[in-house]
Length: 349
Image (cartoon, one colour):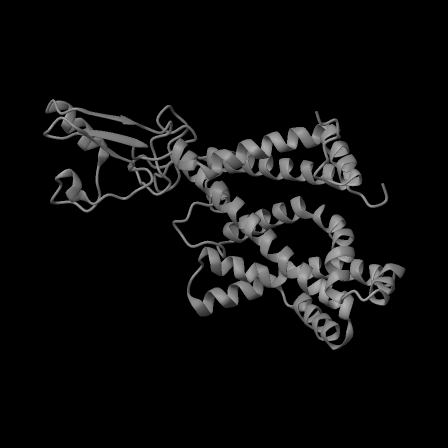
C-alpha cells in the first residue's frame, strides 16, 4: 500500500496565494456573481428566444421528428409552408394542435429574441415583457441578455489578444533590448498621442461599417501598449539577475532563460491585471456603443440600451435602469475578483 503524499499541481507559493485569494469574502462573492452572469449570458438562447428550444412533431407513420428551432434555422418547406421565408413556430404549433396532430414543444422562459419587433413600442415592464420594450418594440430582457454576451465576448477576446501580443512584445523588448526596443518604444509614443476616438471615427468612416471584429481590431491597436510596457519593465529587472548569467555559463539558451526563469516570475504581477483588463474592454465597448461608434445596429448592446435610456429618460425609465443595473453588477463582480487577486498575488506579500 502506497503511503506517499499526493503531489500538488501548483508550487507551494502559488498554493498559498490561491488559499489567500479564496479566503477573501469579496473573491467568493465576485466569482459567484460573475459566474452566474457569465453562464446566463453565454446561454441566452436557453432563457430568451421566440422559437422553441425543442419541437417534436408527429409524422404520418406515427413517429416523431425533433427540431431545435432556437439554435437551427430550418427552411419553411420542412413544415409545409410555401408562401413564407420565416417559420412562425407559434402558428405551426397552434395549427397542428387544432388539427389533432401530435406535437409538443419546450419554450424558453422569455419568449422573445433580441431582434423581433412587436407593435408594443416602449411599453413598461409587464408579464409579457419583463423589462419592457424599446423604441422599436423589441424586448429589453432579450436585448440585455444577448448584449451582455456580446460585451463579455468582446472583453475576453480583447484581454486574450492584447495580453498575448503585449507579453510577447514586452519580453522581446526587455530581454533583447537594442533596435527592436527602440522602434517599439517610438511606436508606443506615437500611439499614445493619437486620440483613440478619432481613430474609431476615421476607420468607421473609411470602411463604412461597425462590425464586431472591426471594433475589436481598432481597440486592440491601443490595448496591448500598457501590457507591453509593464512586461518590459519586469523583464528588464529580471534579466540583470545572476541566474541569467549562470544559465548561459552552463550552456543554456536564451529561450530557456525566458521560458523557464523569466516568464514564470514576470507573468504573476501581470496576470493580476486580467480582471481589470476585461472590465476595461467591456467598458470601452459600452462607451463606443453609447456614442454610436461601436457595433452596427441592430446588434444587441448594453451601450445602445443606455443611449435609448438617455433619450427617453422622462417616459421610459426602464430603458436606463435595466442596462445600468446589469453593467454595474458585471463590472463590480469583475473588479472584486481583481482586487482579491491583487491582494493574494502581490509580489511584496
